[in-house]
Image (cartoon, rainbow, N blue to C red; front, side, top):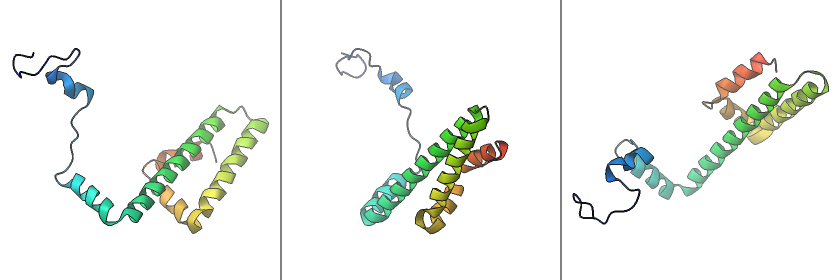
Length: 123
């Protein structure tokens, strides 16, 4: 048993060091309750928000992967193929939700880095 707590000793467990494995989360008081209540009061809206965030993350990841491939190209047919793929993805994203998805995607916090890569790679 641990002398200070009276609890049985568990191999590899140190009460003083558990925060090293999972640091305490700093949240504003009531923030967690607010999110939980919002989920209960508007489950469809919450589900819609989650779907939108997942779709934005997938789009950001797709653009990142394509731009990284384009940066690795040596020119020629490979480069033209990746450029055509980026243009196809652009058209697809612009067509989602009557253009609203494209507008929201450009407001995403990770979009400036995508825009910068596109500018640098002349896409």
